Length: 272
Image 1 (cartoon, rainbow, N blue to C red):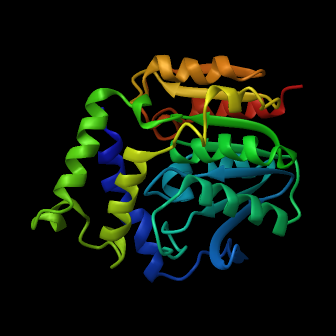
Image 2 (cartoon, rainbow, N blue to C red):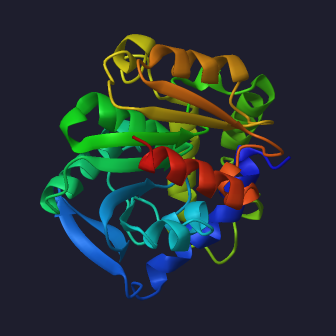
Image 3 (cartoon, rainbow, N blue to C red):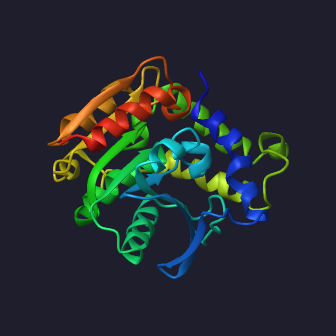
């Protein structure tokens, strides 16, 4: 099973190499909350917001979903600050900042009642968006989300701590893809701090989830790095929560079981 950190290190090339490349034809720039944010737009129809995982991009998190989702939806896929084309900002990475940037982008695009699909860190942002800006959200799908760092399996949490220590050793470059852009290592450290320190219970907790009245599909891999009890805590707190455990999958549900996941997600979004 690939760990979250293995996925993160593998995804760094996909996440940061675009910083030195031209924007994709579907790419656009928006000014939100005083800074530039890159996003892509694909297809047409009812709006569908894709929120990528930590250290990733829409292409690396949803590469096997984009075509299927864009065939019947207007897909909006931002790259959060410090990811992909979007420049890093001063200070730590923050789920609150990601949420507010996402809400500002939707308002800038005059999008209301959007369907939201979030993977891992993107799932956290999706839940926070539904808590903080319910008027923007129609339905939500999350996979591999957690309410706090203790939602991670103990061995995964230990590996995350080990990685933070390794980032401060002289051999740190060995851990990072040689082709990553110059700000990669600094953002890598910010990401590990983000995972170890947040979300905090004042950002997400069962009481806040109880205020989400839109339908939410909570997914996790059969062998996810998020504790099963933690996933159940999330779905049980949601008034209109539904659970789907993806068979034969670890944390990377969208990558490992694309046909199954695409079918389940689209059926949920299109259900009455």
